[in-house]
Image (cartoon, rainbow, N blue to C red; front, side, top):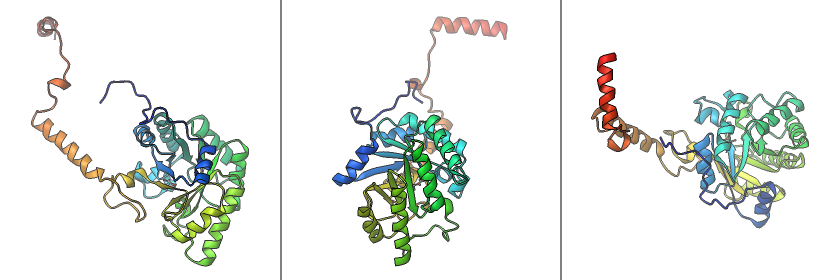
Length: 298
Ligand code: KIV
């Protein structure tokens, strides 16, 4: 492990911070917005260095980092810890933290208090919450009213997937697509600065996107949204066969990680590691003195 001090590293150190007006401008100029999840310091660093516009500390952490089988299991404390670590790696991208299940549903006051923790303790720039019903719209208005930017999320909302009949595509009938469009508009009207559309037909997302002034970020929503988001671990291929079909895997890191650890294990067993360059030395006279004393005293 490196002993050099840890600082945020960006591929473009001159890159300006991504602000909410900059994201709005990207939509106006039809420049695609790049969003990716990250859950820790190195993840935040590489996402930022790769030039992501938005880094989301998603509650997908429950599954991809903590090994649960659903996003509902992650706690506020866990998300705060992961968000704060990611923050230390992100210099330019806008950092959005997901409000976990159970941390904002009870009341507007609960939602404001939780959102404030993510800003104060984890230094998130904004928070994201799922849903476009009356209660969630009230939460969005309340958090925005407290001065904290909110990203919405409709379509497949994993926190309430059971109520949606499972993790399946949404908005696949005219009536359901219309209801989704209405939810998206309501989320915008409630004050969200952007919205995620998850797992909806591409043609439905293409029709909703120009109806909204705020940026629309798609995942499993086709190519015509204003931007895209992917879960880091799906993109990097860290799991065997876990990724949903709408996720693109850019590299298969799992086998590379196993091969690297296997090589290390072989080196240790064959006593090839550590080599001279991994080893500290001691002045021979100090060593002689140490050995002489050791034999006499221990
Ligand atoms: O938790 C998450 O990673 C998300 C993205 C899939 C948008 O909400």
